[in-house]
Length: 279
Image 1 (cartoon, rainbow, N blue to C red):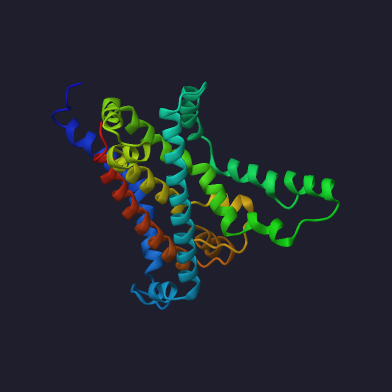
Image 2 (cartoon, rainbow, N blue to C red; image 1 turned 60 degrees about the vertical axis):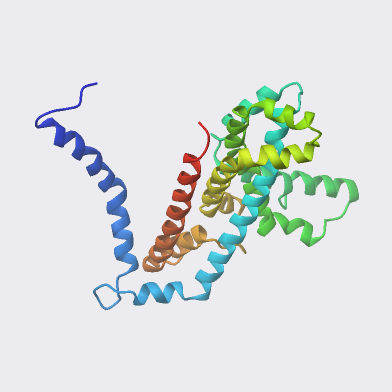
């Protein structure tokens, strides 16, 4: 296609920027204006600083980081093991399983939350099986694990592990297997081959998958909302509560600005890692 010339050139350039401004920049500007607005009029850091200095924000930030970091670490371990299994262990259906990873990425996260609720919820299959087998209710801790920290981590690990597997499988496809054979012929054990040959080659893919997983788990909202977790308040849940339940839009906007800043930082880290991956 030829590049537009004359009067059409500035129009073609201006239209995407105008759409970007209306769809993204303008709502973000309104969000910032609401977050930095003072009750008496004008703009400043007073309201914003007061909201961010409160214990509720600190607890939500800590819960968000704990869940995101824990889920990402487990996803990296589980995703690496599954990717190596699919790539190097010969079994029937390995290629189909690798293709299913791509299909799984298209599923919405709330389906995982619903599935786990049907399995482990207070009225789920596991509890019903326990009652029918033993005739008495399970311990309160066994009933409530799904509606706490580890329940959220389980749901996020279940959903986001394929996001780690995808870049690892792509990186494993381009690794020359002759390197592994040479290392084995020189007397290197499987763990040594993994540590000295495979892991250095997979570091960019691990960083890319881990960064993407951390970014997504940091902003996860649907899983917690659908599972009905009451005692785990993350930044997205705090934004929802402030805006919908309390109608406190300045507080919701201030928390949202911080959440956007964290998301952008993680996104740029993910893009940097993605650019270093082998093509």
